[in-house]
Length: 419
View: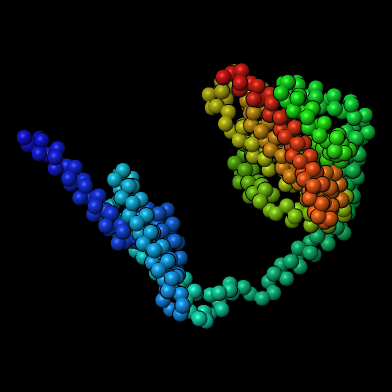
């Protein structure tokens, strides 16, 4: 009987505990979440509750906004109910266990944050004339112009002292582009189409061949053949440069933590900087035309090759490396015969992403004289020719999909056969 009484009383105690948790979480709101170190719930509930509080107070203070006050009150009520339900669920699952002194510190931190954030937010939106330094950031005057002048002087100095380097690089890029364009554009179109179809068949199979044939047919029927071949020539040049630079850098990042620490912020900047910003130094150093378009495209599309090459080498199993060392392989032999072959899927994915990012720069590069399919898109935008713009955009998409099927096809066939 005693055991039976215990079994009956335990669910009752658990239910009362859940009720107390619900009530405390509802009354405390974000502060209760801070007390239990649920900082994600604290941030979300505090932000929404601050919005509801601003709407509620403005509805009370400003004449004719009584509906706003009711809406703000409903928002606050909804936040409290949501906090209570989510908090009780987390506590019931036993996800939060902390000591009393930790809970006290968390409560003090949460209280300070709420007082600071709620006070300033209410003052900003409720006060009829808030102070200027709260509305606008108190930035010192003239710093932006002075810093921009430093960059302008640096670019001017480089253009004056490195003119030989920039001219040589421009000439090399122009000759490379001319050679590749001669292959794509100058060669009779049936030969180029046959090469694409055979490449699709060899890399991916019959489905990719049929898809490539449909893409090439679209490009030819709607008059985009020469422009698409010119675009592919520019993309091929940029991808070749990315591979030549990216593979050694990826290997260096995989082998050296210091190199990774130095290069990772640079890759982040290259990958997140707005694409139009790349055009400014490209035009400043290389004027207009296709060479600056290639340079801007390389800067934008280089990070995936570096990152995924380094990732593929780092993911080589440790026991494989130890086996190569046990057989007396030198570091170069281990790299060329063990690590790089096992990293090929990741490297292939990096090359695929680089191709896609190069194609995404087609329209932007056309703004500085790169030509190709991007020029049709820009002209359609300037003249408001919606249909022609759609046709050119679809042509760019089909080029991207065709190259994607070719590059990734063999990996898919290998995975399908293994499955």
